[in-house]
Length: 149
Length: 387
Image 1 (cartoon, rainbow over the protein chains, first blue to last red):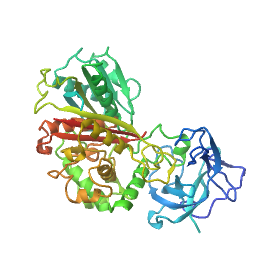
Image 2: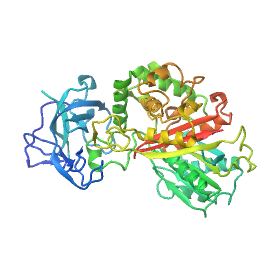
Image 3: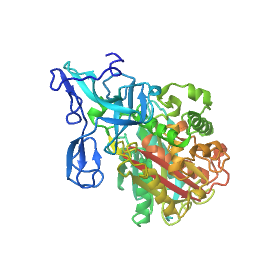
Image 4: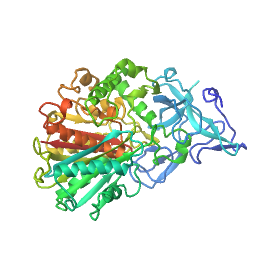
């Protein structure tokens, strides 16, 4: 897999396309306008990602799944230069925190692996990108943020 | 202030020891501490063993090898603060009147490189979220953005701690480094270079606790030399929710920069329990998993005002001979980090310092010391010792 892959255009893998599988179910939707599947606590109003059955801020069970905004701003970033334990993709890869309008900061891969090419506060858009090819030949996808055009 | 005193301490050096098991290292540390305390078989009523990677019954293996089982032996896991957690349990049990003498030890034998942790979900590993140094790097970047800390400051922390490690026979790295070499080492995760990160390694440390001011009465040669050292506070805290870069390593957090860190929660509780403030400290051992972590600890432990870490370092306050030397042992940057043993290794160093027997690392007149550990969980431990 080429290093350019994650830096280039969004991988708009069509929903349900044969041969692709998300890295985990329930994290994100794919297609033309992908979004992260988060949740909002009906009691304290906090948003969380990933969605969980309980609110980690107020212990409420009244937590409802919601689509999170696909555009945020960059809050912190770095690049990972050596493969961490259990990782099955390419290095280097961008890694950081994006602030979403819902008032939350989300950890995510970044499509840019050169920290000098990024700056604090820049708009970032959600992308669904290929991560690696699994043992059955399927493309495993994950979520990442890319600088907004 | 508790009534619990340190009756004896012992270490197995931190480093890489091929063919030596965690149990072997634990035996060395426990024997040394028991000898110093003048405690033999039957001389303690409980044992707490700190380990994060040791596996089932690590404490039983060590005390079993010494023929010293029969008492309760409890293994304790609290990440990088495992030793502080074990110390808290031991000291609390003595305070409660449950025991008179307790053995607290930590053992670890870690693989090289980035630590694999059962903490992460398989998908997080697969997608690259188990990159521990990346979290350190993000935390470092935020510290730098908010406080004027530069890469040169990060390098200066490494230079300081590696120089301190030269004088520590229990440290893994005993050669000094200069800033150019630190900044010349490869970038692991911007802004952190390889030499700004501590090495997970191997080692053991042991502390014998005794109630009622009885330290030094056991007849051990070294016990009480230089004065009785008391555990003024042994505090463990976990995180509050909401900080995305907290050591609790959540996938998301809130846009809120006012959430106190677990280290600050532990420090504030420890200061209150000990009846002291940060200005009363003479020496500090803190969690320098990476160079920025030490600077963050200056703020979290209230050694400086928010945003004041760079200035504290520049003034030389945390250097040997400064107003408040930090990590005179060399810290984790020189000693390496055997998770279960590292917090107790800090306590051993402070006991040496407070007894005035730290050799060339000695902080003149040290009477009050603080040990700080923080890591995954989140777990933060703060121990205050007073002579």
